[in-house]
Length: 69
Picture: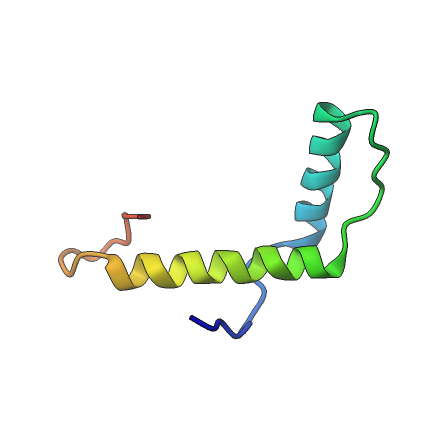
């Protein structure tokens, strides 16, 4: 499945802050201060693919998207 980025679903600044905070909290000996554009793009693509699979697999009843498979 080839996913084409249509729009940003992630707030890149918030994702960067979260990643850097996790490194600081969980692995303080690693002094990371940046997150690459390619890492953010990969996360964006993975999220879109996950959502595409979830929508495709969702049951056909109701009016609310509820299942993340």
